[in-house]
Amino acid sequence: LSGQGVKLTASRVYVANNDGGLKIYDISTPSAPLLVASGLTVGQAHGVALGGSFAYVADFPATLDVIQLAP
Image 1 (cartoon, one colour):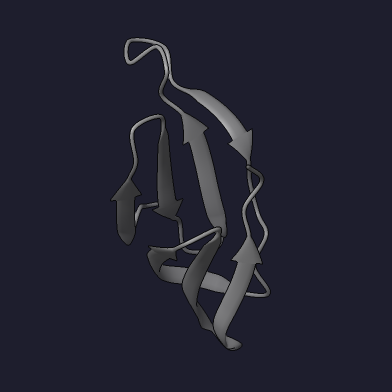
Image 2 (cartoon, helix red, strand yellow):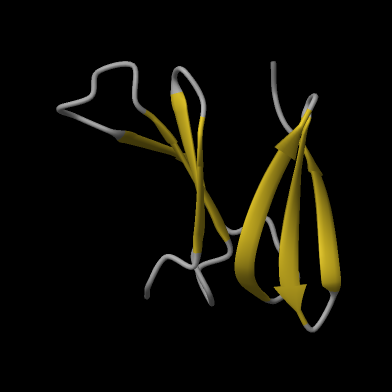
């Protein structure tokens, strides 16, 4: 699997990961990233954008997945 798109916040990294869907890592400890969520998309994730409490994932074949993020 390979990352197609990445977005970074203060404590999380969001990776569009093709067949792996959207992967969310906690990077509170930068030397030890922790996978906190995986999948979450209908198909292949090709890009990700963040807005408010949502992740918008470019997805084939669904076109766009809107995922509400936990606070």
